[in-house]
Image (tube, rainbow, N blue to C red; front, side, top):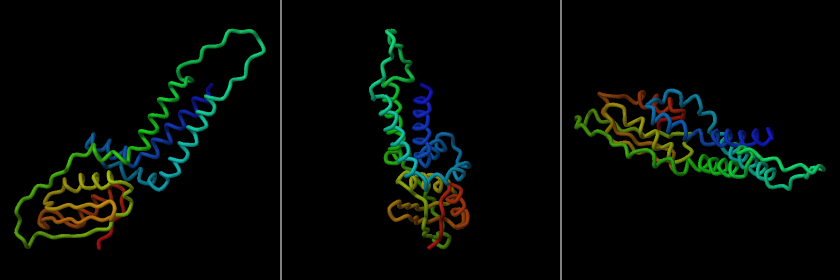
Length: 195
């Protein structure tokens, strides 16, 4: 039954690929590193195809598991199937795949509400900028961007909107620059342009 193991492995890999846009930022949050995130940003546009492929592979795996087995012509005792070939294992893989595919819809709960340190700079040094951000696919993306920008010095106000695909940021221009903010967002794999 090596074929069924390959099918199950394929469904897990495609579920991981479909949710990589949220898995990788969560891993970066846990490890404190975000330098490799832009390397996997190319997976975001193919996410719907990965979801569809995962569903098709799981349907095929369940079909293979539930279809009647051909009986042997001999009067041999039935061979005992291994755990990796059982319905229980396929059920666990299906549940794991569903959890991964749904990750973009609940991953924002893993991000703490980032707070921005409010030092009181002179009003001349406070600058507000609005950006259009392309590539956010869920609310967790906006949380991840907020988390990274809030680590920059001099941040006063950060409002990132997934539905509007934009960010409004007020910052102390003596401590950081628009270029630094832009580079921080681009390192995460998003396209950004100033309004």
